[in-house]
Length: 98
Image (cartoon, rainbow, N blue to C red):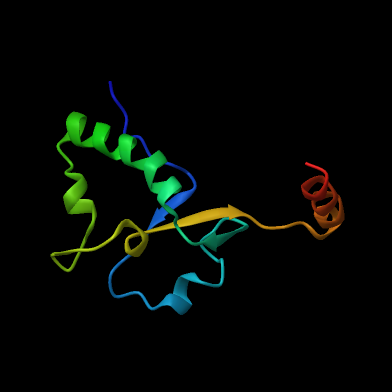
């Protein structure tokens, strides 16, 4: 039986919610919200298109807010791991020497 394909790093925004309700990270499972970029959408879109094919959930409908089409970044938010203070110095070194 097919299952819905969903990225654990993207979460839909819900119309009517004020940003203060979700910007504090309480719903980010220990991560932090980040801006959804084109490359993120390029990753998730094929999965949503497969869901459309399997389950009849149109991608266009997922990109609507109050019946109006909007860009993916206005519907979805990316969740990424938070920086860990103990590793920040090492990460900076790796970036400088990569």
